[in-house]
Image 1 (cartoon, rainbow, N blue to C red):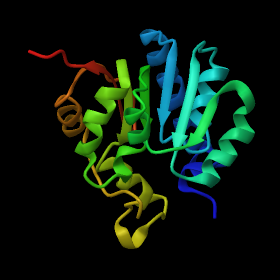
Image 2 (tube, rainbow, N blue to C red; image 1 turned 180 degrees about the vertical axis):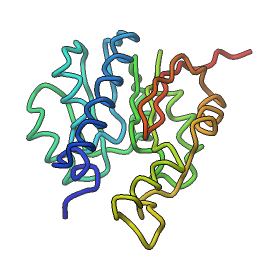
Image 3 (tube, helix red, strand yellow; image 1 turned 30 degrees about the horizontal axis):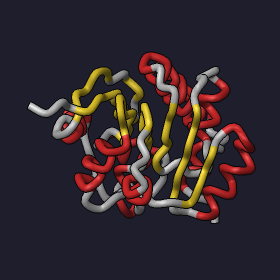
Image 4 (cartoon, helix red, strand yellow; image 1 turned 180 degrees about the horizontal axis):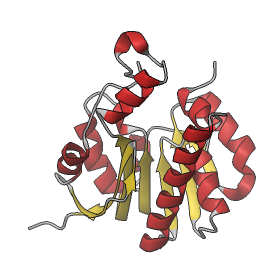
Length: 199
């Protein structure tokens, strides 16, 4: 079964392709601004975002982890030896004492019950920056509904258990991080942030 993430990135719809291309460009611009030497893509899926950053000329050591064996198999085929990708839970990296200059979590938090549990994990893993994104609601659901997707759920993806507007997601991130940039990547909300320093 093809994942929703794979369907999105391999869509033939020209509008969706243009939106995703802009999303990737903005992500690359924020990564370039942060200039990390090591990047963890947490919930990397099939490796599409790592591939986009590599194609954008981002020079960093990439690690990707995901819980899906099928997605990681696809990521390995896509990325080869350009990134280290593994089936792993983020907590295992924390337990191993690993950390990275930047941790990306793009289009993942909307899938996680109790998403606040991820904030301290992100703080432990990210030495300097996090790059996060979620669908921007209610617009994301409305656009799905308008194109005839998930009609019985009013456009809501059945895998999405959390829903944030732009301001609400900024407040969520600000619990543990200082938001540095939030480019317009409609219909998503994207933020570059850094861990808050202890008072």
